[in-house]
Image 1 (cartoon, rainbow, N blue to C red):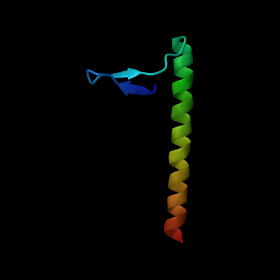
Image 2: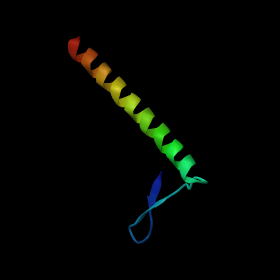
Image 3: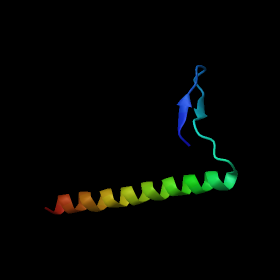
Image 4: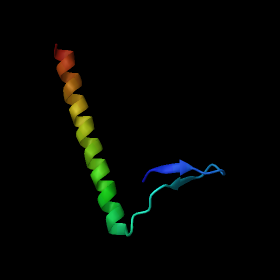
Length: 51
């Protein structure tokens, strides 16, 4: 979850999903999007290296 550092230096979540299932769904969507981004970057870099 997005977090912010508090005055004591501890990172605290900014948003709090209603239940664990929702939190898992949000986390999985974020991780999937990141993994797709990484794969696209790999492909784009490989194409640039070939050019």
